Length: 85
Image 1 (cartoon, rainbow, N blue to C red):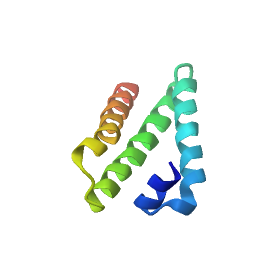
Image 2 (cartoon, rainbow, N blue to C red):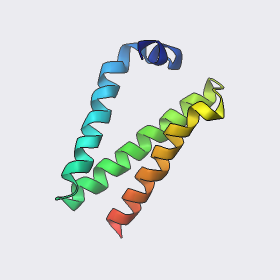
Image 3 (cartoon, rainbow, N blue to C red):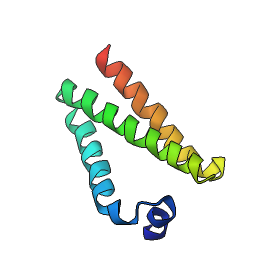
């Protein structure tokens, strides 16, 4: 996984990015009881995964490798939309 972060250009930020992802997932779980937390966590994870897609497009990665990030963008967008409506 370290080599992936290096390829994306985020070798030195991998720990903070991983922590942000874990905290986002925890925020989604807490959001089951606290609707505001669900909105915030799903919005921030959507932004994070959207940035991941953009970065992968910049390094001209194959579409197949972008699919997980795209699916997470869609999933978190749906969660965010449902949490605010």
